[in-house]
Image 1: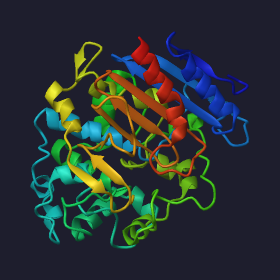
Image 2: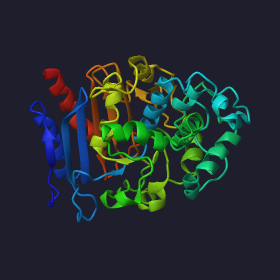
Image 3: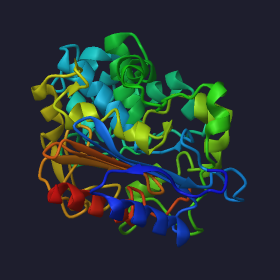
Length: 380
């Protein structure tokens, strides 16, 4: 809409979802945003509105997209689950089986499952790196292959904020011969018509909303700052303004560099919500989908300094994210974006915005809509 008003639709059982979405915009909690939900692979809510820039000169349109930071990790995890389901990747196998150089410095026994659950001990780079190094796949992965883990792998999680995408992505590249962005595009995004990109073509730049940095004083993590957190977050420094550059957008940064909107975040995960079968096409087996629900590690995360349970590439329900149905997986991005995948309700719920909050892993704005969405489903 030219005036930044809310557009899209909600199913008849979800008027409270639209009301909450509008309230977020009217109150100033959001400047521009989108919210979408699916049930049995079909969109039941698809809303967008507000503005694509802080000056409110560009309305947030139906096809507006934005960087979603760590919500990108769910697309990388989904791609790994897909490759594993067809027998090319074994999560119980040692990483070095696929990536021999990785065995250096005491890492010979690290398993792929440790990469998927943030428990490999490679939460950051030991050597000083720059933002430009994040655009150099060979350098970013080679440094990780060469260094020693920061703690005993498999004993605790420590959020791999930037490194997870390079680690899992390199395993996918070694197995398939293609980058994770390419596999995701060819085998998930394009078949489903999902407008999500791990590596954005320059032709799409005009559609990208400006991420608006969080308030001064915001920091990574929600608990007390730990030594490991300091070590990870300052190398490289997080610069939100980098997301407005062509260098960031075109690079494949599979833990933080994905670009999309709520619709295009919700749609790929219908594969998981629907037991692997979407619109008549079987993408994965039911057993392969349920791998995501298998608990890998639980406890106080060494980086986030908060209690969390990781499944295979996703967070599992707990105190951090309370959900109504047990078989739900989730993850969120720095500033507020979020994806919830409810396998019991065969539902995906996604929220994407440009005004960043102070949170690392999603925030209350998304739950302003998710709560009434679940209530509407329960009343159906």
